[in-house]
Image (cartoon, rainbow, N blue to C red):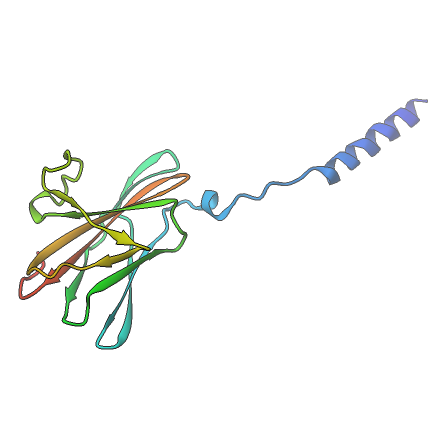
Length: 160
């Protein structure tokens, strides 16, 4: 009788193992680092793709700062817009154009030097007025957010 009970328990144990569903983590939850951001634009009829790494992030319950070299793009007559994309599409994206004086004080209240930039399908329309424009892009995913920085130079100004 004991052999029969042990056999039934063993059989149920094996059946339970094969019926157990294994939940594979999604690409989003597997990531240890925030996705890279890409800037796509055209210069002289040639397609250009720039890769921008995150500068700071709150990712998987930890704060991270990397401060990579800031990408600088020189606006030409033909360059009117930049398409923004990511390795992994974010849940939401917010673009903020930051005046040079407030480049690292983007948490100030509205009207204190920050200007929102309109984005349609992740296409950033570049300004016409001469100057140096620092951009901060904040993107959000289920496991956190990441901030990306780049500079656009319009006219004869030089990037810092």
